[in-house]
Image 1 (tube, rainbow, N blue to C red):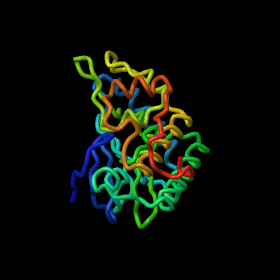
Image 2: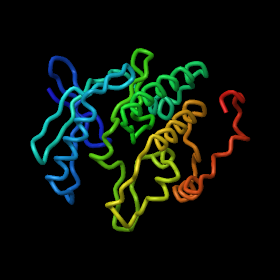
Image 3: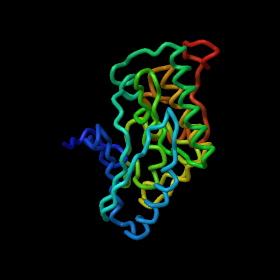
Image 4: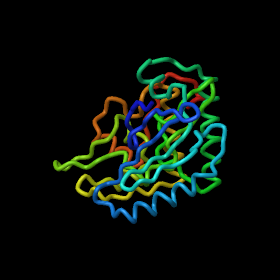
Length: 237
């Protein structure tokens, strides 16, 4: 039995093989050379195969049937932070938010020690299962884009995506060039972590209700979101 449950970096399927598993379908860009992508896929999987951490979802296998590729991982029964914060609009007590942030930081520190960047750290990829944080989709950005370029020219991206991008990445965005390579580093992961921390505290994205052009200009020029009007403890700020 296989069930398609959501779309993000590729298509995610819920399947059963000795229990419930998640199968992430990776669809290469049609313009990408098949041999080049196959080598990229193998290299990335090789780097991820030994990742073992209590706050990182375990990748358990791969499927290669070019041009079809998939990565198999544990199925998470919990709910992601995006749904908790932005859909259910649940408030998270400060002590719980600190606990979640600490667990996220532990997982990110582990990845960085292994020279692996998450590259897609955002609340849609952070799950809470049995009061424990689990990060998913780490290291997959080189295999699938989070955005697409249209003919307008324009960039189509998920809600809130710009808020996670560090200034050095935002400055590289080019709606006229679909081949733009975004250089992710441990520092850009740390910036994304700051956005997650902001969401945990304020239950909204930085620059909430502002148009994309405003976010690109402010963040691209390293102008921080002002916190003077935010009512929260100095400790949290």
